[in-house]
Image (cartoon, rainbow, N blue to C red; front, side, top):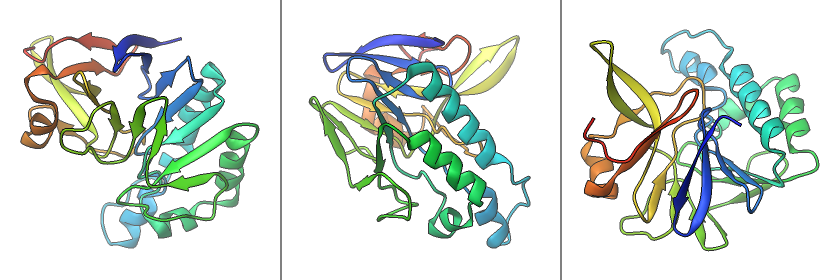
Length: 221
């Protein structure tokens, strides 16, 4: 498995190179910010005309993560759809694909700012989820303990070959973990941004996505 094992709030977790989080002891696979249907929303609102393949690519990578881990529970940590209309725009084949991924396992949709409220998909829609002392919600709460969240699409700038590169990353300290965006068409917020610095502070660590994922114990790169 392409992953980096780390300790968080008394639990052993694995940051997968794809951007998914694997909790082996509980057989929970967590992904955040799929933003399915984003190309449809951008076209609908007169924005960039992007090739409408991101939903297929995102679902293919999610399927790979599920096949690699065989989870009992899949937890989608908000902004799974780019908006309500984007969810309705998915093709029948894409909806059936999601249904196949859901078969035989518990599927939890945490509500995000892009997709508040239940949608017409199987699974449970919840404002937040608590499992064995870890709180899963879309947007981090200031000063929260043992919290896993998404929303910010964190990235870290690194230097490689004399160039500055930006890599999606898990960001965390002793009590809060912010997931990278799993969706194909997603931007990101640098770890140096004041919003992330305010949440995670000087003790911020990172695990950069890739093969293999790279743990950065401090961000003085």
